[in-house]
Image (cartoon, rainbow, N blue to C red; front, side):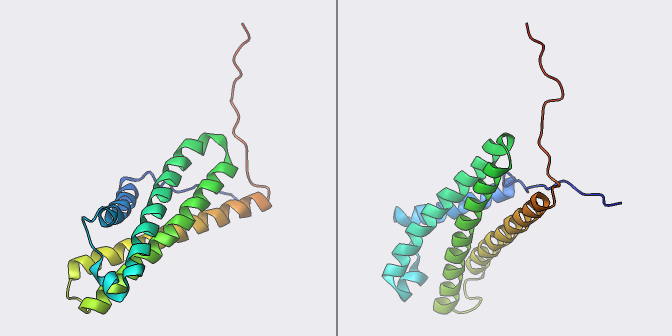
Length: 164
């Protein structure tokens, strides 16, 4: 007997995940408002640093909006959850690339371990964002597999209200 399990989308409303997304927003926000300068990226190319800060700012806003959006559309059904999850995955992948680029620039400009706290924090944010993308991809694959095999269900009210 095949006991199937329900497909579950891991909630990005987790405080740690939300905190990482907010941090991913604050860093480029500070950069755009001149509160932080990505000196390691500027040493490679000032244009790269400008593109990095604006791209990261936009994708951080999109990722946060998608996370909130998943919570809002949960009651509306699978297609909207899938769309919002895909949007979060694309934005988070770009976020991972941005932070991975900053991490590589820090190592290139200052050497491995010369600013260990900064390198560790930036590297962990990049890795965590990539892990979130893999998590979303895995969950979407399980959801589509369940759809293909006909193992999805629709949620309906158990009782209809009486007509007055």
